[in-house]
Image (cartoon, rainbow over all chains, first blue to last red):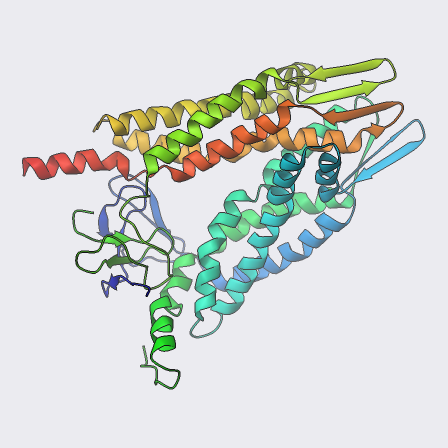
Length: 226
Length: 205
């Protein structure tokens, strides 16, 4: 049996995640932010037209992600020979050289985590467009921060640029289409982060407890309007 | 915590556990709630110590081996920085130096400082300490730069028999340092910084 906590009934009361100070969030105008008076943590920043903007940006990011991963990213020519690699190709090469652990890490941080980050966000904003976002929207929103933490495209970009300069000493380097797609994708991901307001979704999402109660007490129970 | 309320780390909802209970789930997002991250100090120490151990082979062992017709040559991270240093390439060299050598060691030192001050019940510099923690969380990922540099250098330079570059024994250790320090930062609970001050206030009241 899962035991749920008792909610306070006032969602503007929160505890600061960094110092646990209990406080009341003020009503904010779009673009304004609230900070913890004790530790200066930014508690909430209200975004303007959050869902629509995030949806537009995430759709663009999904398209660029496909380009960035399926066309060559870097190539070189030396003495009449050519070589090309994609993002996943880099991980594959590591794998074949016997570095499976590092290959897995590169694949996860540069391919899998960004895909999750974009895919989850797309599902969240689409689901949140409903009047009462279902529980799965909350579940995805719950795991989205983990995907963002391990998605390291911007770090990879710097790494690729350094590699490019290193290689330029030995061979002619050809930047591929994916490199430009990645460059744009990094800015899109930052823009998504800056336009999405998770509180807006949490305020409307179907509560886990309600769903669990409905599941145990039979499916025909009428839901009270909220 | 003194109020018997639990703030959800995921969705921010404040709720009260059932009487006599220490933990329940968040009614809104289903997250398992706790007052403080479980065994936060032990887990953070474990990750930090493991990271510090891996830090040695990560810097001493070579990360890349270059094989040419003339023979093979191995470079450590620091040698890679030196190789990149040139009148035009020094900014990149500096990026690698900061991201691969300075950030990991600074992270380990910063987390040790936070752990020691929390365990000694320090009540000073709380704001600076929580700011330090946020910085550690923010910059940690950048240490991965060198892993990506080595990955793509090795992936591209496969021009046998002219020249080939292969990742070497130090690379897995270096990747382990990055992952372990990130996990350490994640398992540290910044609310612990404020706890000794709050418990003192309660005692004096």
